[in-house]
Length: 267
Image (tube, rainbow, N blue to C red; front, side):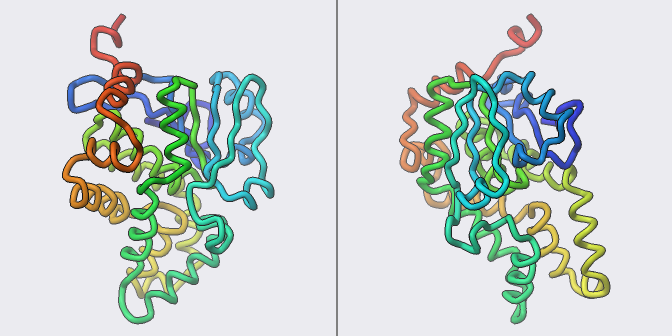
């Protein structure tokens, strides 16, 4: 759950292991990771990264951004670029913080719509998304350790993590906790943008929301995602079946492999 030892906090590289499922088991460590763009890792971090033994990397960025800042090539690892959102929306939703920030402020001229705009965009990504379908295929095939990433490791990656944890039966409180952890690790970037907005930031809480949406994440987004899924499908299992073709057998297979009980943890 925490940024791995030896990596800078801003890399946002985390192991999804340790979260508890509703049946009392916990997610196994060392199988599913999330991070920022791997081209942002420094030489020392790349050495540590290679030691993780990652077998599958899914890059959720747009083709343009993947080309501008390509991932390093790792031996014995399948590296797949599959955009999870907005190939043509400002080229890449999170890759130009200044433009996206200005767009949000513009949207806010007639009232505080920032949280609604951002949350709606993010919520739309959870439905029948080909990138996340591939993610589940790789998890079902046990092509692990697997890492998912985008640019900052917070939005598309955060949504992917939400879906994984839902499939593994992790409770909502822990899913929200994992999503919001990006704010802790990206604090340097958040504070920098806060400072750059100057008096505008101090006079408007809407600007603070925009800052968090650009450099961090906002709780309204994950709350909307979970609420909409429940409203549309009643249960998360029903959602995962209709949107990602995950049968009860598939979910049981995922949970049996990626979860462990207390006895297994202690052995």
